[in-house]
Image (tube, rainbow, N blue to C red; front, side, top):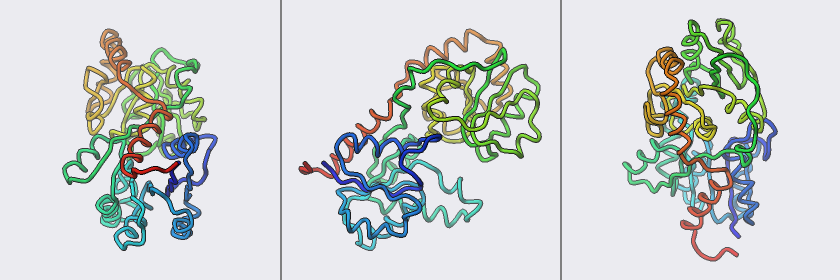
Length: 319
């Protein structure tokens, strides 16, 4: 048995609607018999007291708050191995609001001063290797019952789907513009961006939030799933792959995982990509065949891989 402390931006243990990486993994750690102390956002001010009381065998940090344990580690206030799970690009996410320099300092100070890095990003893994930073690749997973659900009903001859944050930072505006003159229906799942909805054409359907248990039904019902963010580790990418449908992506870091005209259609022009995919049924069939060969793990399997890494770095007998 191991004592695992986690500090993250989560606000609850087991939410009903959106369930992300650091909702799933602690649940499985506990299922495996380990003791977990998860410090949620509202309890950050008590973190160090919780650390001293809990005496963890390993400390895992997630998000910008990881700056705090990295600083404490540098000051020798924390003795336990500090693992930072580097998932998001916090400069891109928060730089505009909080300042690019400030967020870059937080992000790279955290990476430099953590003992180990885990990441679901091939791009970030390669950056750490370039810096000689100990790093372990741990991909995202999918719901344990992902393969068991049946496709939902979506209207339209060609059904395009995007799930997640609806923002210009995620380049969703480019997707909306791309479908204006194309005979298709675009379904957007996630919190509705009213600014984008005001100018969206009639073939764009804002579906709002759905439970994480229901989303796979819609992914399986779509003809084309779209990745717009310049990122190689969005949760949706792993879910899209497991759904086994055609994937259309904007050129960028997604190329670290998906290959143009082999496992996805990667382009700088979404409208052009949509037109070719709609017209070329043979290409679509090839993409589906190839993407189904890619291995995507369930969250339980991901948790096992994460624990293998933790056990390797901590060592010893914790029974």
